[in-house]
Length: 225
Length: 257
Image (cartoon, rainbow over all chains, first blue to last red):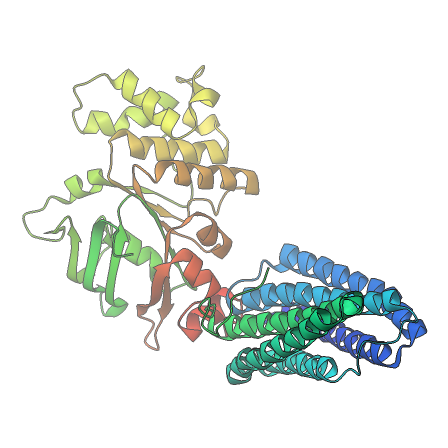
């Protein structure tokens, strides 16, 4: 007995998830670009567009619930569904970080930036790349690629430490810079969280394929809240 | 499942009906005071396997059994073992409720009378009906015919009848497949309630039922020569989330060809 309905529904759910992923990717890129160019108009667009990401996530959740009610999936189907749900939540939160960055940009308003942004955009690129690679790993059921995402997180953490130290130096040297330095520190923190959530996605991919959760701490980090 | 105490153990079990081999090389342990479910496609031998555990297959003509089934270390097929005694320790409930055309009371008391029970029959009947979650529904009409009960009630009566002789194990062959969904859930609740005191082994076509009630699930399939064999067995959550064998995966996800 073949059940094309369940397969089709699961495929459709994956498409929805990838759609959500690409919205989040765009939001992240746009939030950083707007921050760098001091484009407040674009920043407020990112804040507005996050509502659509949230709506998509809710819709995906509703579709998942309906699928459970109709098909009561088990085994690989069940793992696929649960993985999709978890990843959707991760993506939704990543969208919130993009929104957070946009809001920081709006708070900075027309103040001149503290310093030219170099490491923060680099963190953004790495985090976005981790997101993209984790979703590719999902599509290809590729645990090796997923493991690669886990180790990439260390680079982002390294950049975060560097940004943190640098901003701290600014603050120590000139207390007048504290507010502007803090804004940038928040941005760096948001990006560090994005990278962590990309590793969560990679861990879900490993679960999907193997049926086993990677050991907590196995990649020098743990599942974030 | 190493910590489980094992009540029944099949070792190298092979069963034939005349020339036809129905089961091949079954090795399986049944944990005590748990629910074990046998699942698998029609004809895979799961009912045959179930019936081996209380020597019911012997009642079928030309059947023969090779290998052993140990109950607490003793081979129940040994020549000095009386099958009637085995069937008292290992009761059975069938797919279609089969109450005797007698009163509700007499149905439950039947096994006691056959065994020459000397104690308080009244008391045992009440206790068994209570354990089968039927007492409240029938206590005012114990002398009316069992055949007037609904299907679900009849099935619980059969369970009460099995419980009356205090078996260690109850075998259930698709006990809910002739019942409506509500009566089915009542039987499942009953299995959960009984399991801490009585080992239950069920055969079911309803995989969700196996997933809902059982502690251990065993998946059987039919070989090229139509002999049934055990593909995989293990903790039920494991079987239904991450089965080891591709054939189990295909069967439980409905992609069986």
